[in-house]
Length: 430
Image 1 (tube, rainbow, N blue to C red):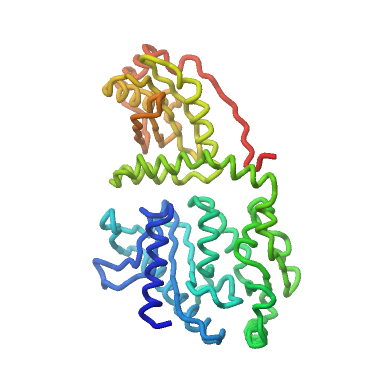
Image 2: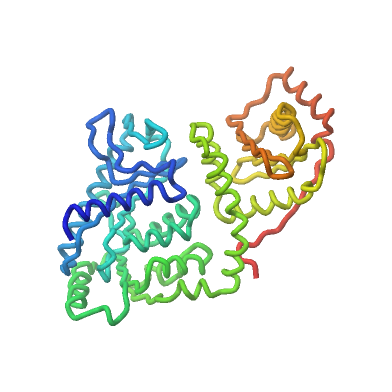
């Protein structure tokens, strides 16, 4: 494969991640220190809330020599990631780079206490590779081939679910030699076997736990799901120096379970949140809309399912109503209040906006300002004319303003007779 084609495929991979996944507005492909040395920092950077993902994408051609291949890919990737992390998180640093759609981004190193390092190898030919490697400062770097990475991103298709998996993967395999064995038995010829034994022999260290894992990244993910978002004892144990663990086919076993099939059916309603963010919130990608999108996308897939089911149950109560009316429902997830407002389809715009404001401010007063952030979603009972907003850094209103809000709440008869609704949800329905 010529170097030009390799470079094009690597660039296509970066663009696939940056623009065709749920990470679009938080991805920075090939960020450069625009106001510093102008040098490229890494292949892909993801900045989402307190999470920083530093990604190195490699696409060297594989010519059968595993030792040379790992040296040319992993050593360079680890060096790039280590350098990027030092540059980005150095105290008092001021690194700025551009996003293709939102412009200049000023990275504050104090904002990130969750850092993940990923090496993604575009080449899927090698039949074995380490699942992780450490930098010179003993920082863990995840290693995925392209198919593995796309598989888990498609399955763990929310930021919280993906980050939680990375956290558990890092905690489990840091300090261990973890080798992934891929392909079918007939794919392994004598030369591959020789390379495999030679490579593993060089890694044997009596001070490190050694794991040979036969299976794909999705098989590993299945183990994580089967153990309630943890890994099985065999993978976590440090009681022996080495282990061979075979999990080929575990992902298909996972998918064949009735409760998994039910989960996937139940999850369909959760994509209401994704589509709302895509079609309504990020239709205009200004900074305020991106803030609101960030809060909504901070929900896990299960939390989005709860949100979706709650919204449509609420809508079902009022979808046949006519005339002027306003209905509200509130719920709290991860210390964020989500307020849902439904109104009659013939209500005037100014009346809707007044109702939205009172719904948000009224909750602040009723809740005695305990919550510091409210995301508000409003639509008609015909599911038209969506509106949304957010109040953050909530502080007590001035006394005169609070009295006016309380007066208006009494006029609307809001927060006078609170109805608590309890709905039970199971992630894996039987």
